[in-house]
Length: 637
Image (cartoon, rainbow, N blue to C red; front, side, top):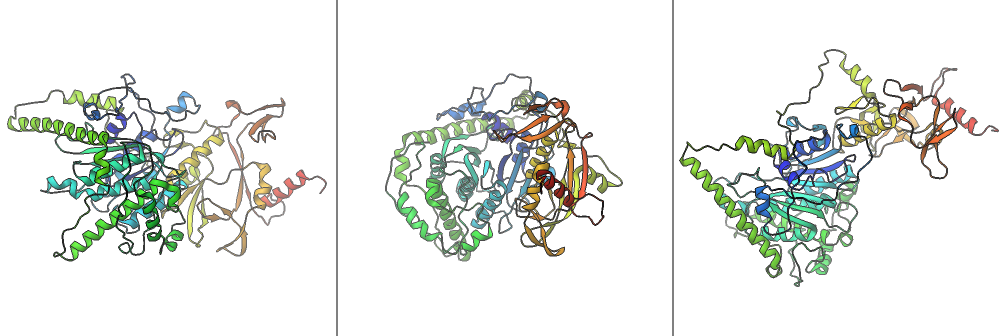
């Protein structure tokens, strides 16, 4: 419920970071068992939930007294840029739609994600990644680089729209040192966000106390890299503890893609460099400048310390998720590099102290110059006011807990009313979480699934010759509760392709679900001629292979002819605009939008399957069809 609460405070800023019909890419780190991810998948993929209350929204004002308003969860209007509205009917807007894809990074073991407990959202749209070290530790450079590579491959280096972090650990009896003990976790969660967010992306991370210089420095630097930052305490957070959340809105980046991570050096400790002194520069809280103190000196130094011994790493990661150009990435790249170096220093200190108890107690106390922050009056007032406000509310909550513990006859009569009001405001139905029902198929299960979904191909190969199974979809009835039977065939296949883009991950070892290439009959000759001849394990000679975007290939064995319109209509390409239009042969009329009555539904669509090559003399095949089409295009040949 925390994520629902926070998302409501910002008027759905996180779950509407991408248009509804597009895929929302998100990352959830240090957040097992995965409540934030389950909420995001539920909110994006299910039909909209309507409340009986008026459409009031919450707006965090940009002042130091923001915490009073957020703690009380008051209502104000907020003017967020709404996503691009695409024309669709009211009934279509009420339909479920798979439109979110999540990536997770968290510690293995008891803190791991529990996808099987994702009852409200589709767990197939989420995949946990544990990094090169296979332990999910966000403080390890190699894990950060591996996670960035996975996201880069899945998003074509675009990055995620939002990144959520909810890290924490048991501090036992050292509650007063919780902030100090969590400093590296704070740093690495922010670092992971800067690496993987796309320009304009949003970031949410949990903090505790915000008193030490190290924490203040992180908040200050993040204020430079985002258009706006907020520190909030949602009502779902226990009022008696110091938990709070840092919300960063709209990443300021000079790039068109995610920044990426510098490849982990072969010896992280050897690449460690100290942070050089730099000259002071003017700054102001949340200003949009991207110039940092000592930018020129740091750039020269870091170029010489991050390019040795990483060629193999870049090649191994296929150049996805790699921060390759420090100059183009500007201040964002410099901060990523600086945070990586600080994190390596912290890891080195921990290693040295674990090896010998006689080593001096060293630590990194600051990551930004004291004079710069202290000169920034607005920022100092913001931090001081925020800490004082949180302390006052925490004292009130502790006093109430103390009063109830001393007098067991005291009761709170408004809890049920408040519970229902919160769910209504956050647009959460007051129902029990239950798993999605799935029909029990006692017999002939594989045949039924195969008939409903598509054909199973056993000839899908990667570049290294690895053979994998692939399920190819040629039509759909229903996708995640959305009835697709009456939709046009092209729309049905668009939804199927979007589903495959969501549920297929580059690191998955299981079979992939795919949509075969979809082309017009007039394009068939050119398509077949352009198929590259590649080696195949099943053939002693080179054979024509279709290359998939992720590097896998398969050998076509058949062609499926689909009639998805009534007989009177044909598809053509406009010579003037290059757009697809429809031509009625009986009426000699053309239109860009085919009437709904002329589309064939799922049960009316006709399929004809042709083998690629056949030895039967009078049996049609793709080869004979190609010969016929070539003859029709050139009658004098």
